[in-house]
Image (tube, rainbow, N blue to C red; front, side, top):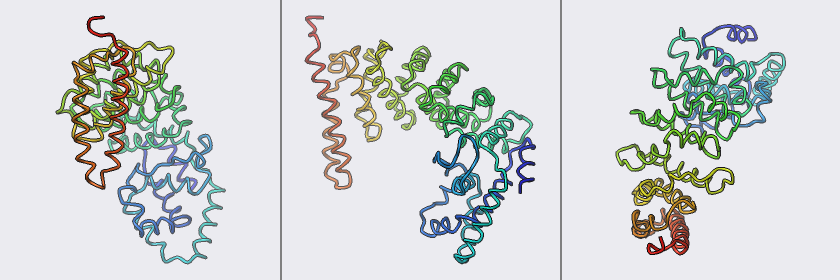
Amino acid sequence: MANLITSRRRRSSVSLTILQFIFFLVVIFSSSYLIAKEIENNTVSDSEMAVGKLTVNDDADLEGGGGFPSLDGMLHWAIGHSDPAKLKEAAQSVQNLSADELQMRQQELKEWVENSKMPSDTELMQTAIADLKNSSLSSEDRHRAFQELLLLVELIDNANDLEKLGGLAAVIQELDNSDIEIRITSAWILGKAGQNNPLVQKQIFQHGALLKLMKMVQSSSVEEGIKAMYAVSALSRNNVDGLELFFAGHGERLLQDIMSNSSIDIRLRRKSASLVADLAESLTESTSNPEHQFFSSRYFLKSVVHLVASSDFDLQEKALMAVKSLIKLRTTKALDFKDFCSLESVLERTREQLNQIGADELDRDLAIDMENLCKEVESLFRKKLEEAPTRDEL
């Protein structure tokens, strides 16, 4: 087994053969009985067992890139790289094992793990990066390398190593790949690696990737646009440099165009409204970054306010949160909300809509939460209106 792992490291192609073999051992010798029970009880669905769906999120399972010190950690890693049908078949096959047989095989596996060197996270990343750089590999193998890297960068230590291993530049280069799936996964990797990680965010900015991602948001492919918007949001939220780059790249115009166009996929419009809320909130709280003047544009404000009247409640909620944050900005004008955006009438229509929903017991909690949010927005609006100069004073 150790020779197999060593051989895998030396090969340039990414293959799941070894991963599946490791997984098979784990299932047979360790916690497969529990998985079988979960499958039997339908607590683990087939879709969740698909490649990349189950990931290692517990830092306790990984020690600074040292691989998988626990059986549970190795098990979850193997599940994420296994064939769902084989996983189910293997799990079901151990249901007939006795408790003594399971305990004996667990002990055998424990001894094997102790005597074998599993690949560390760093080694796995090096292999994946080498493979995604290798243009001679098959499309399937390159896609697999991207999926492995996507899984690995969820851990902050691995994300921090991405640049020094040469992976960051390689992933950013693939944003221009002719293969749309590779472009989508590359944007996803950058978003995951950079989320709440100032070090990686700075590195991504230095490579000039934010502007590329902003252009990708406008892709004719909905999925590409959504993943690019995810990455843009992850990189620009609560980051002064990210905000400056975002505004310099006309990101505010990008958001306005998306929110004001009803033909654009609603998921992208939701993400845009959510990003507006976060950016406006961060500008309000910032002591070093001046509030960007564009947020004072009445046309931009109207593109947000009109979303409050949406029949999609998720979009409606995100739009209300955005309006709430925009009202707090010193650069926005109460009279623009009142006269140009007709905020009062929009809120009134929203309340009427919520009253109809509230009649349904199942949606009552949703209606109450939305009504409370409407009240917050109206209260902030009234306060801003009272403090605003009249037209005669302007």
